[in-house]
Image (spheres, rainbow, N blue to C red):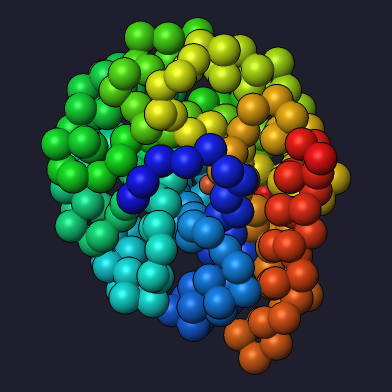
Length: 229
Ligand SMILES: O=C(CO)[C@H](O)[C@H](O)COP(=O)(O)O
Ligand SMILES: [Fe+2]
């Protein structure tokens, strides 16, 4: 997985057909997704439960590109090796999920994955100031985590602060929550390069009618890239 700062669209399978994950991953990739985002929730760190490492391992053969695993679980450390073994390319843990995020990021890299750190809307950019050389991706939550389809919370100032803090380090800024063609330009302008989209990517389509996925992904990408035109 090489580093580049171009806009990458990462559909979240939280908005896919839960009875058909393998086919959904293949469909969104065929329709132009750059990464596939997998939301792991434990009913403890967030008020919802989704799936675990066995599901990630099951969909791995259906994803050609990057499998981006967003862990909304606490504790994190006991599960890192299982998600790495399941084939996660990026494993992202929340800075709020435990007292030892520094150790967690070291453990993710030691397991062979790229290390991501996520910040809830109420958590300041400065919380990752001492983690910048240990992280490959900073995920700025633009909703309170736990559910898809929520209203976008503007975190433009935080994104700009993080982009300045990162400097020329090879660290992605990922935005997660409420990203659509209207909000994509705001986050791209502020310095984000990975845009997670659940509802806005899967809207109107299905595995038997995947063309809307392509239209949705192209609309989000065009809106984000438009800020540089
Ligand atoms: O981490 C998440 C929620 O906690 C999801 O990735 C996110 O909400 C994507 O869904 P949507 O684009 O519908 O907001
Ligand atoms: Fe997510």
